[in-house]
Length: 388
Figure 1: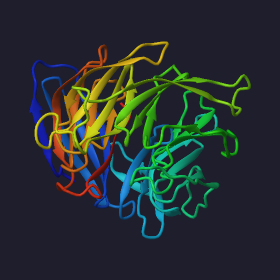
Figure 2: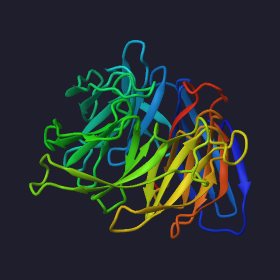
Figure 3: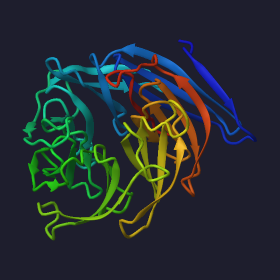
Figure 4: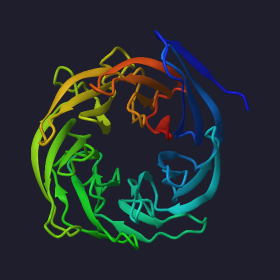
């Protein structure tokens, strides 16, 4: 099948050839496979495959490179959401291995955990159902959840009428699963039964009312430092974690260290919010939506330097997201590129990254994946790199 779209951007010089697959999901109901190829001087980003699949509102993609499986969750809220699993070929084309597994309404995120390779189970964050669900892997097609853990809670913001878990993420020790809850101003903490996938809830990390935590991240090799994007408070916070003496037991002790706003002048523009947060090396990145820092419809990615060994971090600058609503971004395995998914403009922009300094550079290639929209309920929802 020939490429559906292609955009090439010429840089300078030449270097080793590159070929890597990416996948995107969008709220119009599509999963798309992208191919990023070329060398320093001329990169091309092509849409090689696209299909209407993963329910009515695909919201998040999780890749298990060990089993070459891509998991997709569908944020449908009218009745139930759904969970799907896909295999992929060398060109990134997807084939459904398990389809339309019923979940609680509104899952927006998923994460692998448990077992010897940390890929024996999958947890889902149900924003629309105030619950986390877990499933044993591999999926077979008629799967029932291992657990459905419901939450109570609310906050002072209009978006906090109920609990809204927005992410599930494994900590660096692989012994705990954490879930920021945007509606309840908390981060839920669970211990893990590695063999059977059962989660046991510990005490929450309770945040200031109206914080609205969305996503969190760690630096590789530093499990005692956590960074949290607080959507409603419009800031990024850092925390140290003291683990219990008994490995894998409850009793994590969180200490707040610092708050930093992800905007170059320290002031949040009206209507702006932080969205995704990721780390690579000693650099922390946060995408911000609706800030128009680089002109009308041009939002930003904030870069922070992080001090190894403590939770201090400093805003080093902001970079153009080259579109509106960068809900999602991912960093290539080699650290040389960052793929930015702009929800409202429907584009993916691959930007160069200096792996030594973390500084973001020029656009290497771009593509329009889905039609531009003015609705936050539509548009691009997730972008993810494959292995290199």
